[in-house]
Amino acid sequence: MLRLSSHPSLANLPPQAVNELSPSGVPILGLVLVVIGGFLLWRAARPSNVSRREERRGGVAFLVLGCVIGVAGLVDLGLDL
Image 1: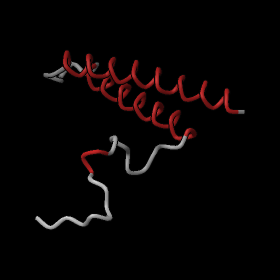
Image 2: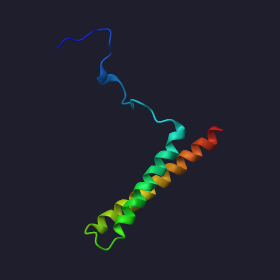
Image 3: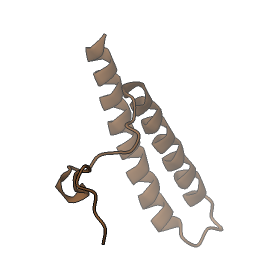
Image 4: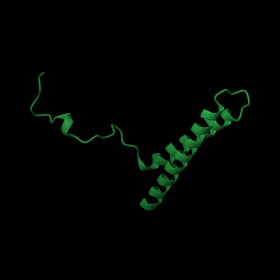
């Protein structure tokens, strides 16, 4: 395999995101997760749904995760002001 000596090896670099999420995007990400969780809980409430238990668990998980991420993002924005 041909290697150029001017470029560093990718194995030695720490993992990084390609496009870092801006601090103002973190509360929006939390809101999106809360909406997904609400949708899953709404689907779980329908009596004709066969997978109600799984969707209820997933909905609660998305709601909690979205709330935690959203609050952390708002606190981070508040501390930056």
